[in-house]
Image (cartoon, rainbow, N blue to C red; front, side):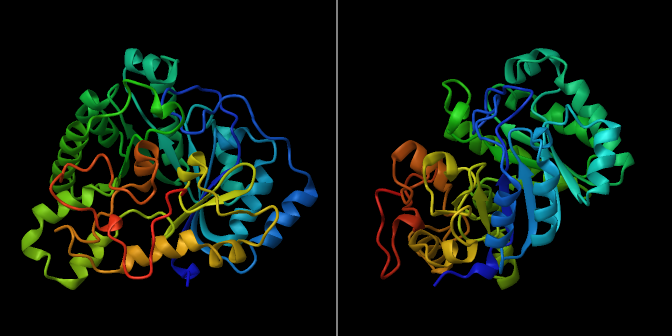
Length: 361
């Protein structure tokens, strides 16, 4: 049975429109790909959210504030969650726009920052002016006292500048930094962008060094393999049950604590899996409670996440990234291709009793 109450976060991708065309964009954002919803469509969406409450909803895109119906999405998000965060490239966050967001009840903003110099910015964004626009936006967000997190997607084009990026962000007062493994999805699957498994692991170790030397900064690392680095460095504490629960929080969150909805209303156990056709229903047609509770895929992911495993020394701390697995291997339940622990068998590929892999997922 699917435990709906443990799903605390929703990534609601409301549009595809964007003023940039970044080389790593998962949904290939640029020109809008959906028709405008009518008032009756928004009423249907709100009705189909009934019975669901999230701790946090992230409104993203594209660039979500470009959607002409943004205020309607925000209104629904405020009704179904405790907190609403906007995921933005930062370039359009003017004083007036931030004032609108605050008046609309937005709690925080996640700003993307992939480069700090003009040359790298041009390679990634196609616009050399983006870094200056982003840092100006960061200063404005801070003046509005909105919660702020700055997110970096780790790729070949910027990983050599990671130390400088972190130093610069900390210098301007950023207290929450997020790091994402670049996934081979959408434009992110372009040759020459993604890190190798060794480069990725070494970069995660570098982030760990920053974390232990900057206790006043919150580091969010969206890569299940980061849990293996924490485990190795905190091994002497890993008999403690509270520590193990904390480490388990770094495992793949697909279907366990996080779900995604795309601009057309499609629902997936993970926002990135939306772009790998891993769809479990559509909120335009079916109540979300029904979609989640009747999904065998959700049940599989949740059961695997809690079943103890001895197939790998990292047990259920990691479980690998399901989006990378299906992108590279064509099988959602295969081993994460970025895992460097080659002699270990991934727990997620060893099914608990009663669970079968679905090669079509």
